[in-house]
Length: 120
Image 1 (spheres, rainbow, N blue to C red):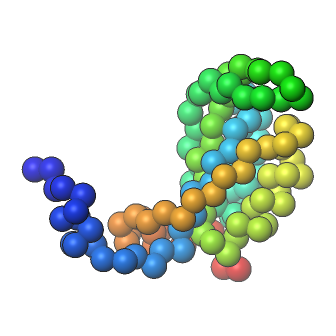
Image 2 (cartoon, rainbow, N blue to C red):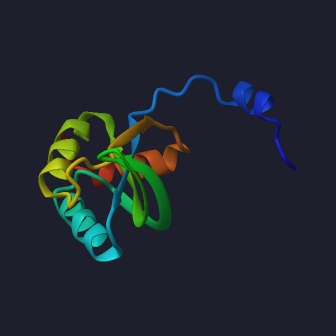
C-alpha cells in the first residue's frame, strides 16, 4: 500500500533531525575513495555513497561536460564546518561542490549515524 504524502505528514509530524546530507563530486572513483576514507577516518561522517554521474557546467566562460563520481555524505549538523574545511583542503577541484541539506530518516538510522561520528 502506498501512503499519500499528505497522510504521511500527519503520521510523522515535525522531525527535529540533526542529520545533514552533503553532496560533492570528484574526478574519478580513486579520488572519491581517498576523500571518503579521510572523512570517515576522522569520523566526520557515518557513511558515504558513490555514484557515477555526468555533469554539464560553466567553467571559466566555457561550457564543459565531465564524467564524475558523486559522493553522498551522511553526517550531523555540528560537524559541517569541519567537514567543509577538510573537503576544501584535500579535494582535487579548485572549487569543489559542497551542497548540504537538512534531512530526516527513521530513528534507528539517525541514531546509527549519530553514534558513528565524533562527538563534537
